Image 1: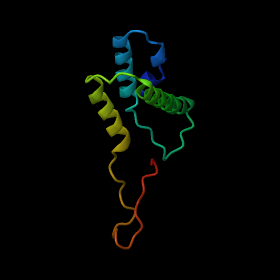
Image 2: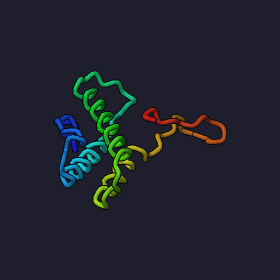
Image 3: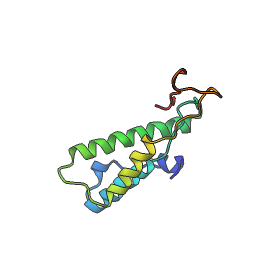
Length: 114
């Protein structure tokens, strides 16, 4: 998935009547939400900013769909959901700012993306 894929118009989940089509769109949106944006730099590119907003909108739509859904999610959705959660939560620690970093004496390094 790429930023261009994220920006391509997709219908909202609530406008999809067929359950199989809704499940496919749900999984597609989960995969698109695996795209990671760097919040440490300010990117003036309007397409980049629009893609970040689109991802946020899709994440909110996914949350709404899950919370308002009266049925359980299918097993097909689980791997995509875990992949999206992992991509957005688990990151490697940033390199220490000091060459002789001592966790007992030096302040910790926080990832600005958090």
